[in-house]
Length: 429
View (cartoon, rainbow, N blue to C red):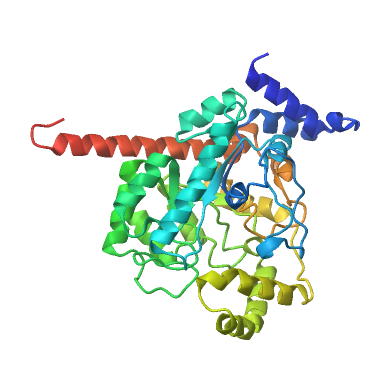
């Protein structure tokens, strides 16, 4: 049996419950959802599992337990996590973009060093297990790996501060396989404003515009998650290729500034881009967002006290440990259900069509809604969309085909730009 057909058979058995000795479901929509989910290319553009790969005691090929809310391990990290190979297989999650992430407060050569260590960890994972996990850098490589039945590892860089104000460093990351750059994280860079702070640049500086142009030339997706509204509009203007929102949701439903307004979603789609819906609970639910904001205001004096008690970037872990302990002592805030993910998907689809929406969970980097604690729960989204009346084609688009088409277009623009540059040289091509 061809490997991809074997893979589909295994996933169908897993999702039907047969492998666990359960009676198979008889509902026709449930059965149809299992088939579609098993056959589709299911991609997630943002997981923060990368840091785990740096731990020699943690194995991506082992099955782990989902995080338990309020329980943390060393350094404040949850004792559980959301993504590993067995749970990707069980949840029919074919490929993930491993986030290369360093906090925006860490800059310069140290940020570059730590970024390279994470890139090395992802590449080493695929090199150690080439029969099970493939590193992909193009849409064609994603499709080939899926056909071969292998899990797919891609890389996205979460924060422009990691290029250290150097297009040469950016080119180096591209050569190593990074396929998108989130222009900022929660802190602004020296060349772009972030949604996490008051703007200081008015969006993109001239160098920031050069970064966008170089991303186009290199064939890397310009990711506008985390950026300020002004940076978003500047990037839309400058970029020749369509843009990616790797892990953002809809501001019309939850007013968090990390989400996109309807006008921004329309502009993203008009340029051919894709909004990958984030599962983070306060990005999904407006009431929770307001409650979290109020709580952060209440915790502000403690944060200031901890910064004085444990100053500097090297003490960030100590500050986080004490802050987490203080937060654990407070009454828990109500969490939304996973169905809010579908509400955001449906809102965006009604706004711009099914060709511009996908999945960017933020697994292992955020607090998830009830019922979406790890990768095994992803098939719920497929079934929920079918129950809302989505067609098979629409569901396949949202699960991964939209992202692949975006990657293909970004790759095509890069070829066009390189050809134009070559033709403009003295003597032509």
